[in-house]
Amino acid sequence: MTKQLIFAVEDEANIQQLIKYNLEANGYKVITFDTGEQLLEECKSNVPNLFILDIMLPGVDGLEVCRLLRQNPRTKAIPVIILTAKSDEFDKVLGLELGADDYVTKPFSVRELVARVKALFRRVHISTESNPEVIQFGNISLDCTRREVYKDDKLLDLPLKEFELLKLLISNKGKVLSRETLLEKVWGFDYYGETRTVDVHIRYLRQKIEDDDSTPVFIETIRGIGYRFNDKGASGK
Image 1 (tube, rainbow, N blue to C red):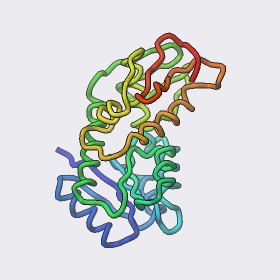
Image 2 (cartoon, rainbow, N blue to C red):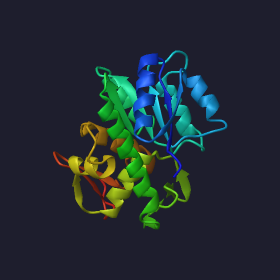
Image 3 (cartoon, one colour):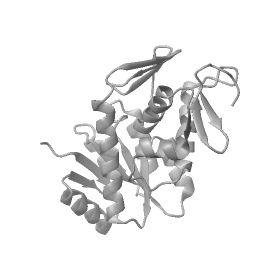
Image 4 (cartoon, helix red, strand yellow):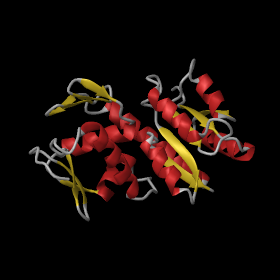
C-alpha cells in the first residue's frame, strides 16, 4: 500500500530530523523543507496527504503558508498541523482561523505529534470512505463524497475540520452537542487540545454559512454546554 506523504517545513535542523525520523518510523513518507517558499514551490508539481508547518520561519512564515495553501484549489482540503511556541495563544487561534486543522506546541513529545498525525489521517479516511451522500438543509448542501459545502449553490471554502463540524451538527440538527462531544467526534480520542479549539472553528464556520444578523442562525450557542444546529430556522445568537 502506498505510504501517506507528509510535507514538513521546519527551519531548525534537529527538530526537522526528529519529525522525519519518527514519522517515517511509523510508516509515513516525509519530505522536509527549510522554508515556506520551498514547500510552496514543491506544491506546484507535487502535493502531500498532510502538511506540518512551523509558524516561526525565515521569509514567509507558517501562518502565511497556511493561508496560501487554503487559497489553492489543489491543497485547500489537505489537513494542516501547525507547530507553535507554547505561550503563543494568538498564533494558535490565528492558525485555526486561517484553516489549520490542529496544532502542536513546542517543545512537543514525539508521541503526541505522531498521535495527532494518526488522528487526522483517521478522520480523513472516515470522512471520505463513509456516508457517501448529499446532506441538504435549507440552502446548505453537503457533498460528503467530495467533502464540499454549497450555500445557495455556491461552493464554500471549508477546511476539513470545519466540514466535519458542520456535517456532525447538521446530521444531529435539533440536538445539543457538548464541546467535549465535538472534540471527541471531530478531532478523535487522541486529541490533547482544549474546548477553545471548538469555539474557534465554530466562529469561523458561522462567518461562512450565516450571512448577517438578519438571517436565521444555523448554529446556536447553548451556554455552558456546547452547540446545536437549529432545525427550525429560529433567530437569535
